[in-house]
Image 1 (cartoon, rainbow over the protein chains, first blue to last red):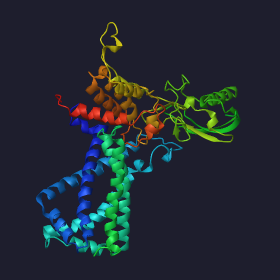
Image 2: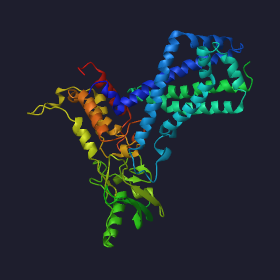
Image 3: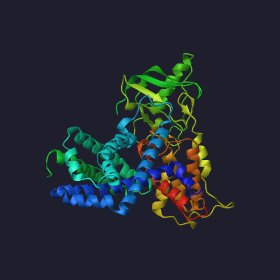
Image 4: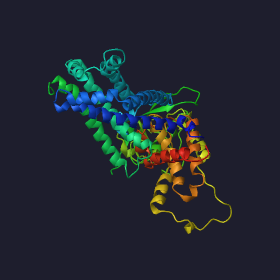
Length: 222
Length: 255
């Protein structure tokens, strides 16, 4: 078996999920850091600077292509794995173990991931898509800070954003640890540390993200 | 613990063979002693069925002391029943009280087709072992055991992995019907020892290939296998298998 064929085996597919997942985790960290600039309470000056850099820098724009490619691979491979795994037990159990043998979120990665995807479609259609459209065909960069301020006055948008962040958090609790376990790092030495960092990441990052729409809605940032 | 007797309702999966559709059949058993094992309770049921001229319930069993890996019942939603690190034969009736209803199902996975009632065909595990679970040993007299120094920790970890009895509870408990815990135990106990080194790379790739060919699902690190394993095989073995596999396919050999 050569290394290219190995990507189609069960461990190879796990590796694809793990590596794309880790890339997306890195992206979340960068995205969170950039957007948290709104909390400087400077009318969005620092946020706009950062957003301008991210939107126009050649390297970042190139990485953005990779980001979408990895995102799509993660989604497609994840859904294919879910469908295939479900087909492996044609006759199901009459009584299931439920949460006695495993936490619910570890068994619900496809569901949580789909919720995150639905949120992502809404999120991209509200900010990323109009901005890129305007940069390509229109009058240049849009004022993303003003757009955030306006969008997050609508109650249902804020509610959907908070729900999206909750789904993301639960997806990450299992995903973060699972990515490292797949790479073979879930050993006695590192397992506890990976799980602890994973839980902290899964709480801190989604909470910071959720605070953005909530802060605009509650007029905590101006 | 005080001895007591109980009457129970059993809902047991009946299936003539893999080509027939199965169904649950309800039985009443009475005067079951709290000191019986779960399988002895089934013996009582079967004696009653035979006396009534009915077909007894087929179930797998052999040593009845928790080391052979033959027994395989999915009891009230749990592989080998509710007790931690216990096989079905070592589950005892003191777990239950008078009037309880117990649902008993076979291991359910397409890779483990039902042979009859609660008996499933686990030969897929044998074929995975045949694909790579062996070592090369020179013929002739056995070498002195102390000729090869082995790190104590590695010896312990290898032994812990080798306690896998291949019962298939990991596959039964896994929502994906993945066999990774079994394969990882079989790869680990050889990979940790110098004797396992010559076939190290081909072992990992061949056994994974066979595991996929048998139609087991993919591991998504849920961990239900570890929770249900009667021998306490750790998920760390799956991490090791992943390392072995990554090392085997991405190292600088010709392929």
